[in-house]
Length: 235
Image (cartoon, rainbow, N blue to C red; front, side, top):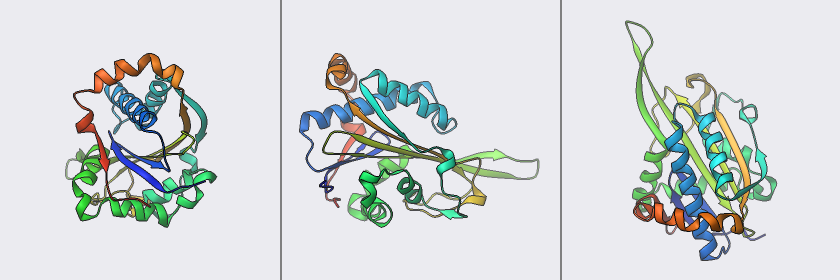
C-alpha cells in the first residue's frame, strides 16, 4: 500500500495525515465530521482535566455522525513503562501493523518538520490547541507546583478511507517544549497516569449524508480558522 503523504491538516486539535490520494469530497467530509465531533466533545467534557471521559464523549459523537468503529487500539496499560518517553513512542506503540513503517523515526521526522521554522504558525496553532499550560496547584502552605496538561491527537487516513486515530493525554510538572510531540518526558514528573487511546473507523457516507448540510452550515464561519492545511511537510 502506498503510504506517501498526500495532504496534511491541523483540524481542530488533531493532526490529520492523508496517505496517497483520497478524493476531495471524501476528504472534506472526513475533516468536517471529525472537527464537528471534537467541538461537540469539547462543549460537553473538559478534555484537559477529564481526558478519559472526553475521549468517550468524542467516540459517541463520531458514532452519531456516521463513523463506524472497526477496531479499538490500546489502553492506558499499553503505554510504555520506561522512565523517560516521548509521545512519538506512545503513538508508535498504538499504530496498527498496516502503518508499521510509520513507527519511530519516520513519525518523529514528520513531526519535527511540522515544527520547523517555515511552518511555525501552523505548528503553534496545533500546540496551542493541544496544551493547557502552567496550571498552578498549591500542594501545601509553603510551596506550590505547576501542572501542564497535554492532549495530543494524530490520525492517518488510508487510501481505503479508513481513519486510524490516536490520542495521548498526560499531565506533568515539566515545562512543555515548543514541540511537545517529540519531547522527552520523565515518568517520575507525571501527575497521574498517561492516557493512550486508538481507534480505526470509517465514515459511512449514507449515514453521514443526513448530517452533512447541518455540519457544513455550523462550521461555515469557523472552518477557515480551525481547519488549516499544512504545505510542504510530506514523507
